[in-house]
Image 1 (tube, helix red, strand yellow):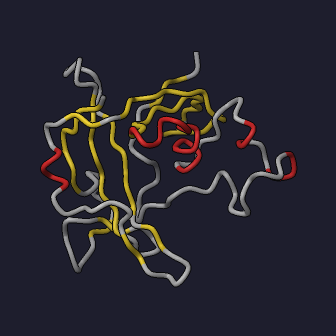
Image 2 (cartoon, helix red, strand yellow):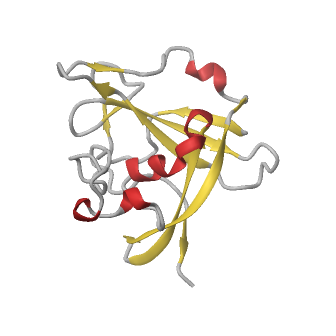
Image 3 (cartoon, helix red, strand yellow):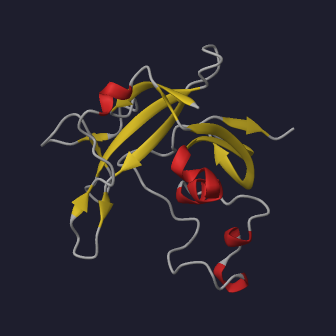
Length: 165
């Protein structure tokens, strides 16, 4: 379970606010984005983890939310299905430090394939055959598995990481 502690725009001052609705940030391609801050309900002193959600775009280029975003604030203070997961991933850098673990919130409907959540945020999970480069795995879609949602002006997704020991 995850306790929802905040829903709203990114706390990063470099993100672009949607001029038509200042409740949302905008991605580089113009989709609306929200951040959901969650934490372990059993330990209020544990770190808060931020998970970004974005509008989808259909084949005709129409942007829409897969979930209704009106009324989401009613979830603040409640528990939802999901868990905080940490996985070993392909090394990446944060502020000049090389790290190989990534932690993120995985919602209940995503638990059966949580590696997909990590891939969607640009992190290749070690040991997941779908994380291999396309020449090694014919099941990978044409979109590169290392591509991820690019937030307008944001250089990294808010998440906790661990330094290699």
